Image 1 (cartoon, helix red, strand yellow):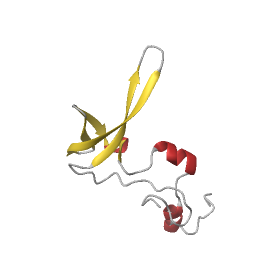
Image 2: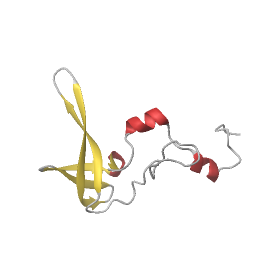
Image 3: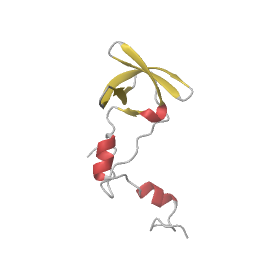
Length: 105
């Protein structure tokens, strides 16, 4: 079982994106717009620098500048995994035990 998979519900937890440091291995998307279609690629690289809410990620010979919200740890599930299996809400329910149905009262 992955460290991102919840032991209670089996769905996947969101990774913590607040603490990237230089040398971390991360994944991110690169969008290439071509004449007739758009190509979305997933790249893996290492964090070169961190400044405010941005990180510089070296993938191959290029350094890509991305926001923290646009990069994931390399061992975290992909967006497709979250779409297929769902996002764990156990921690959110534990913080607000009176509202387990997901409706506001």
